[in-house]
Image (cartoon, rainbow, N blue to C red; front, side, top):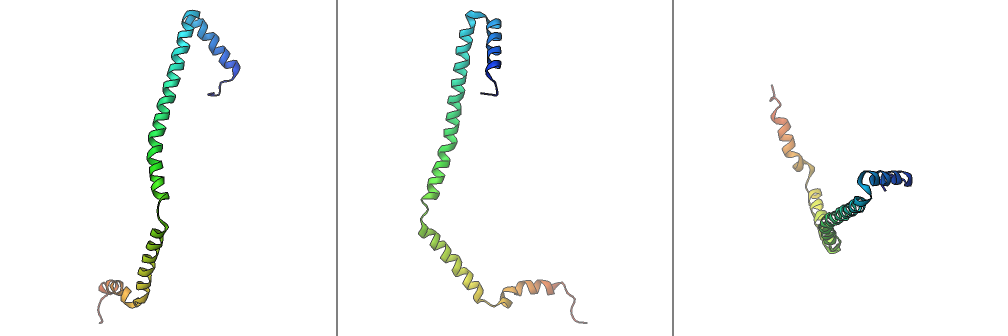
Length: 107
């Protein structure tokens, strides 16, 4: 707990009793306990607020249909085959024109 061992904890308790007195020490202990409970409660609420949307997103991705993956893969493969069917010269024409545009003509 916060790197505090038993000897340190005993020293802290003895100092608290000396400073607060035996009458107010139980009240201070209750106040500290209440503060720790409230902190844990807020921490749990915050964790829940972040975890819930992440679980919803995870459920969405887990419900992704494999047939959807197959459809997308098929579409990409068709586009790739279409590109391979065209000649390289046609695909490179805009690039060739751009290179030749900046060259001087024949002398």
